[in-house]
Length: 314
Ligand code: COA
Image (cartoon, rainbow, N blue to C red; front, side, top):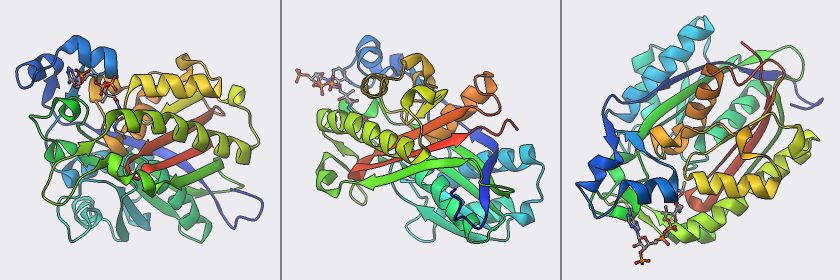
């Protein structure tokens, strides 16, 4: 990370998983008083995927990342599962995923809402800095289980999915050049979900604060990396709403064309959304070795997190 680091770390492989079942805007038109046009215009979402368990989706994504990396899974020292939708209150769903993947390592859940994956990635760099060899970071969600399917304000947005990344020790300073994490608990009432209840949201309050939180987190991480927004090759933002990303990019002075977006086909998958968008950019050949990426998320709490990384090209 910096010249003070004991060990540098870099991302070496990705994996993702989406449920088979597609729920389109047209399907939602039959369930609540809405229209596909309204959903597309206000959010950018055309369809989303629902189904499965958080542990099942997480393990599927994690397995793909392990296979792509070619590493011995027994060399993974820690599994961090970012999720707002654990399968059980206890134990951590990370422990279930560890068993499904046959790993022998530490395992913990991390709830930083939709910023969770970036929080987890930054934490992984920290663990490696302190001596770990490899950390598997997964963002996985089954938000359909928290949605009130009669509430048109929220049921059009949230969905299920998972994305994973292997972070490993490397020679030199590693791929993380700047990072920032934040939370503003004063905004708790704008988006919350009580136990055995459904998601409650003030859409406009979240929208307004999300744009500001994204910009702030991005600027802080860019400052640490000593880079200007113009030096970023690709922005991989949390996929909550196309208009939030457009507005944040405008404030940062980064062209929207430099973003990787998958929200049109995934909906808002919370902590899975950034790895899903990163995988999409990689699959599409939009990232090459040495590119500078800005990963930036925000979510309930109101959390935000950003990381500036160099793409390793693996
Ligand atoms: N279909 C049709 N109309 C809908 C609707 C739907 N699914 N949901 C709400 N409406 C109606 C509202 O009732 C309101 O009607 P009214 O003017 O008669 O009262 C109107 O559409 C406008 O609602 P509003 O909330 O102002 O819309 P908006 O432009 O702010 O868009 C969101 C709503 C939810 C798409 C938008 O606010 C948003 O994305 N906010 C951020 C949410 C978010 O990202 N949450 C996750 C954070 S990680």
